[in-house]
Length: 139
Ligand code: THU
Image 1 (cartoon, rainbow, N blue to C red):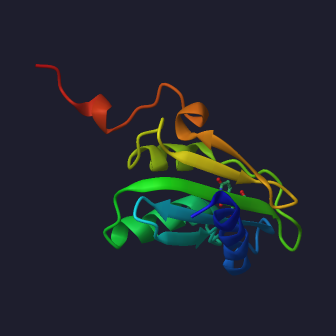
Image 2 (cartoon, protein in one colour; image 1 turned 45 degrees about the vertical axis):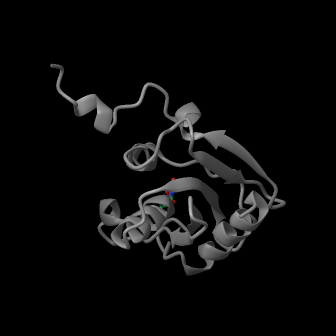
């Protein structure tokens, strides 16, 4: 799937955002290597830290359905009712995504106001990461 369509799906996913505290809606569209898309939005909570970001919602949906091979995620976020505006994933989401992908091979597609986008690798956004490999004990 091309990244323009993935960006459109991410922006579409913002419509279901539950963001009554921040009024900042975020949508994500996660593409698997076999071409399936899982979308997600941010879901806030009266107990603020209990809320979840759009990117993790998408990953949780995908992983819980058995998906394990991921190619790219598009992220569209901005004030509710307005165009998206370069919403980068938070640190927790970068770490969460890093668990399931090779950072050098996984694309993070950031959606601009006019729905064009810029692509980064997760490794660019989370260099020197701590991941599953870091926990392997030395012989
Ligand atoms: N948010 C996301 O959904 N993804 C991010 O990577 C950054 C922040 C959400 C969390 C909260 O609901 C709102 O944006 C404002 O922080």
